[in-house]
Image 1 (cartoon, rainbow, N blue to C red):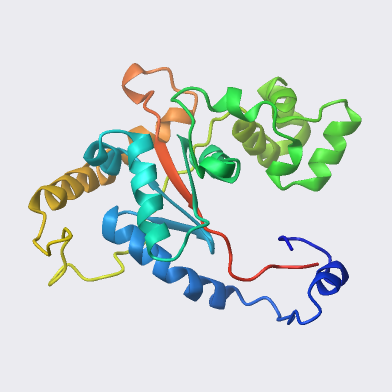
Image 2 (spheres, rainbow, N blue to C red; image 1 turned 180 degrees about the vertical axis):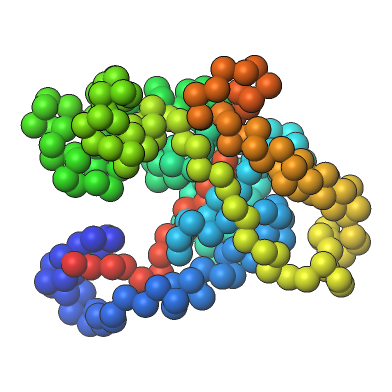
Amino acid sequence: MRVGQRRRLAQSRLPSLRMLPHDTAQDERAFLPVLRLIDENAPGVQLLRPGLAALRSRGISRYHGGEESAATALREILAEAGYAEVRVGVADGVFTAELAARGAADAKCAVIPTGQARAFLAPLPLAVLGEPELADLLRRLGISTLGGFAALEAVAVRERFGEHGARLHALARGADSRPLQPRPPIRSWRGSGVRDTAGAVRSDRLRRAADDGCRDAGPRRRVRGVHRGTHRSHRRRRCRVLAHLAAPDLLRCR
């Protein structure tokens, strides 16, 4: 069984399958323990949708000595808590990080080097944009991949498809300008702490998390300016994103 599978096919493979109406609130409640676990080890997590969360990689990467080590550490923490199917992707932007997580396959962890988002996205099909009408129109023009779409002139795309099309074109080029908006802390600051296995409060981790949180909250305008076409060198800073993709407990069938 898989997500998006037709109902009759799913029932034929599992006659005892119980069909339930989709409940977004229930999905969010089911995903809350995952968010809480991520937040305890890497503050600043953002819920994108049930089953998918993202956070800036800078703070946790500094603590673990690198992005791949940080991704592996978080995946192991979640696996020990019973979420063995979680996948992690690290890339320049939420869109690319999510696709990296989806394509992580057996490794369950994929890190796209800085500046390589466009090359990673190029061979992927247009279907990953989630816009069937646009994908159908582009296929009629002989374009079937994100790389082909990204090769079009930005001005021409904007004139033909409007602002929404220009936004999708930017995603295809690996220029995801959406800023992360971390959710409020799941636990209160008073009486909370990050503890090691012996139970002692790790002040160094708290200090680093607080410092990184202040940096992320302060120069947000500079981070947003990365993909707005500015040519000032001090604004050409990429926002590295670490995305967690957890396998849903319920499959959504059509």
